[in-house]
Length: 322
Image (cartoon, rainbow, N blue to C red):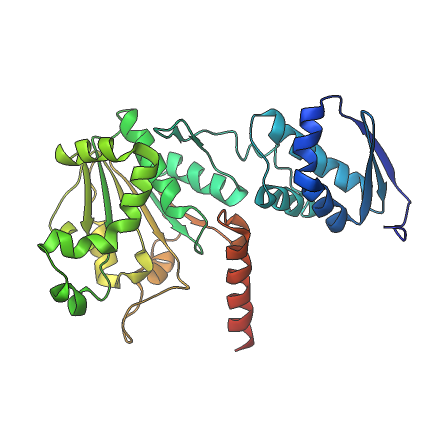
């Protein structure tokens, strides 16, 4: 840090020791991230934090954003710190965009679910304001989880009478016959991620109770043919594995008072050779139609382990080289 260009110095007062501890992080890990990203040196003297370096003003703005997050009751983690810094470098304010102020719902364990990135906020806003929404992006961006949270919120607010979750059972033709049990037992492995999200938000007892009353349906995509679904929140997950015929069939199922969310990752298509993805086609077919919105999430919207973001970037770089 001795060679830092000291052409800026900013001083801020923090008189709450708890806030300072949260801000700096365990073993000052948050501080180290800020120092490295903005080429600054941050020191503390009693209640005063001194920032020196080339981008001291930018570092101060990032610290201010992190302080607002702490004061709102949220906890800081490495992913959130890195994301705030990334936005600051792009000239975007985390707090001014109200990114994590909107609470979608509260889980049965009392945990609040809210968008954590700008892309996620755009996605949830689209779900509030449109009847048909497509959430397209890589793994870990919260596409399915946020859609299910929005569905539960709509159900609790009596905006819909039923939640329907569906997925294409890719490769089912070859493998289902070898699995034990009835047809539902055979397709459940393909639907397990949907169960996991429901259980995490609503709890197994509530999910079981509403499934018994047929207020929640979790079914393979093939079960949707021939149905008309009114006042329902319908989610099609893993839509990159639908054919164009399946996508058209699904999108013509919903009726009055219903909302549809389609999620998928067009970089992970598992369809057999010669089969085109319905999700890739629908982006071109339905673009510009009122009431239909597209949210394209990026690697910066990944909210899983920070290595997930690095893995996605590595694959994209490798693909570009090829």
